[in-house]
Length: 349
Image 1 (cartoon, rainbow, N blue to C red):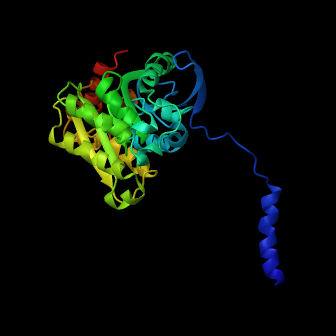
Image 2 (image 1 turned 30 degrees about the vertical axis):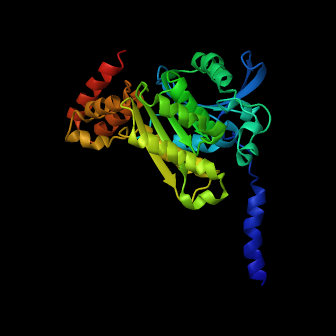
Image 3 (image 1 turned 90 degrees about the horizontal axis):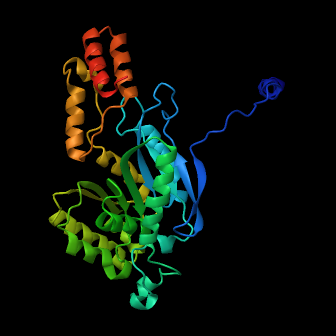
């Protein structure tokens, strides 16, 4: 017994003899306040910068921006997704800035039309509380004040993604249809298409042949087994919307729909954002080691990607340096020279 106590106490003594001291905090982003003249109130946004943003070696690198609705409930985990998926040497998506928009009056800002409970079915009316129908003002706030702040203070690429869930989802669909120039791609989760007797579904039916300017839309909803706790018309309205877009997908819109069995209304953004980012940037990942056998792999990959996305993306300078460093370590001077030439055409000093 004495031997056991001695064995136990010695490590404990050593532990307390060397106290642990606090180090730097782990910081994933910062919160800023915008004094909105459009909405006549103070609005908070959260900003995440990718790991490579402050690297002195790449001071001119530009980054796409994700605008995230309901930032207070989605910002933290989405930053982890971005960090993991964009890591070198095999990034599946580019490094990006995330801007989370924190709510003050969610129903007001994230609904497309103004309605009263008397205009809705009894089941729907239970969801309507206070002001609503403020999408137009909210979009003006985003465009004139949030975009301006972000583009002024950060090195942004003019490629924007909007992510929305539930009321945020119908807001994103409204934006795609009626404010098509604001964003390049949309990730939409279990949207409240039931709102105002399915007004968005009716508008899409009327405007299905409009020019969607080669936008990309990734739409999710819960699986049929999870529908039991939903509004009955929440599930069916999304199904109707998918049927419309699947049968009549415009040539100027890239569209994908996924239903997740086992995910409920609250959890669906977790899996959906992961898959949505992969869908938007499908084809971005490169197995650069194949360059040894295919010297034009980088050019071919980004040519195909840009044709698909209707945008001029290029490999980051850091990625090209990573490739050059790898082939230098293997003694493959031919590939080093080829990649260096390609880099020089993209990033002229």
